[in-house]
Length: 361
Image (cartoon, rainbow, N blue to C red):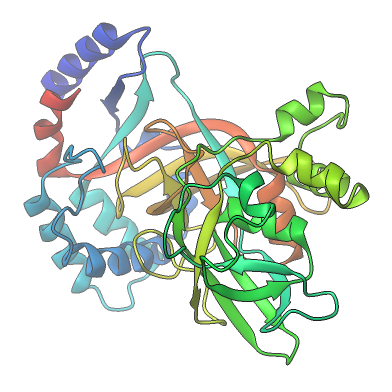
């Protein structure tokens, strides 16, 4: 362990000042509040991820093809997890401590990661255009897919993409594009899901910063952006939203269960985390030590818990960048919109995998 730590410290020095991924082995006792988490919940989420990864040819590899640990080691710990039936928190904690090595994840220019939040929006819609339901939700186009948001809003997709349904709030649809999935309460009382199906190929551009620079906002949160857009309907709001040229195409999904992440299974509030799949991968237990806003008082409180990477997002860049899934509801929407904090990020890697990572960093 000392030899491995020394090697990784040399790698840290070599990568100083660069955006290269660096990892540093630590002990579980170094993870803030590790013993106070509810580890059985995290183990359940990890096991569900294992069930999917066992069938994936590129499991535990980044989108760029780099292995995060070796697949044989992951399959072995997944097999151990499958044999634990209704474990207690202590039993689950012992499982993680016995089978995994925690490593601090950093880059040469930033030791802490940025932890933001997302949620599952609830919109209101109808199967046909009538009354307040005027804004179409598109599936993947039949032909050209790379129109910008402004071009699509001007009608470029009419007749060239399926309309899944119509919603009553273009601003909420804009935020649904950012979140990637959500639910729609239909005018007949039923609930349907909208799941990410594709994207137009344009980069995601956050509109909060230019809005603040233009004097539209004093503080930037999801709520302040939304309130401004709703207070300036029509052309003014559309012009601001069009500064983000990225546009998401959807597909229908079940209405009651939580939205599925990129791994293909329903997300779990405050246990599922989205990562940059160029620099990280799915199905990895990730311990975070950061802070969040208290819903009732607005003050900062500690957020320290074990999550599992199950999703990704276009705004995520870096190995220790994470987007925490908060769930569905008013409190969850507020919490996700407020979440924007630096924090320590740790990967839990199968013990046998850690030495094999040295050549990658």
